[in-house]
Amino acid sequence: MPGKGPRPVYLHEMMQRLGVDPARGVIADSELTYLTALHQCQACPSKEKCRDWLNKAPMSFAFAPKFCPNADLLFEMQFDQPGPIGGPCNDLFKADTLKANAGGKEAPGRAGKR
Image (tube, rainbow, N blue to C red):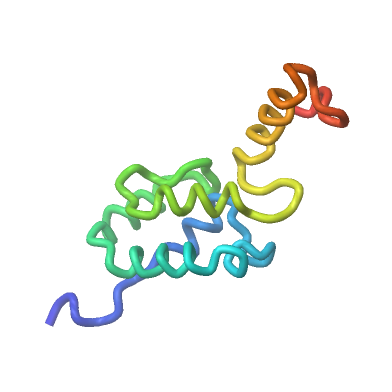
């Protein structure tokens, strides 16, 4: 019967291409978020659309596609990734936040690092 066997899960490939590195502790620090994303990926009705999108997408990208039920969770994993760099958007966001908190001045050690 179709649909009764194991369904492919593309979460790990999506994480890799988004720069989410499980070795940096993102899964351990956000286990509930990861397990929720894994469950949603397993149950996702857009497997074929996802596979086609991944086949055509570059090897790295900043955001999951809008049709992905995990787009928000993947962004959260990118942003919450431990370490000095985090996801693709993390460093720039932190720099802007530091600048805003410093009254519009560049935060120490950040000048010219955009």
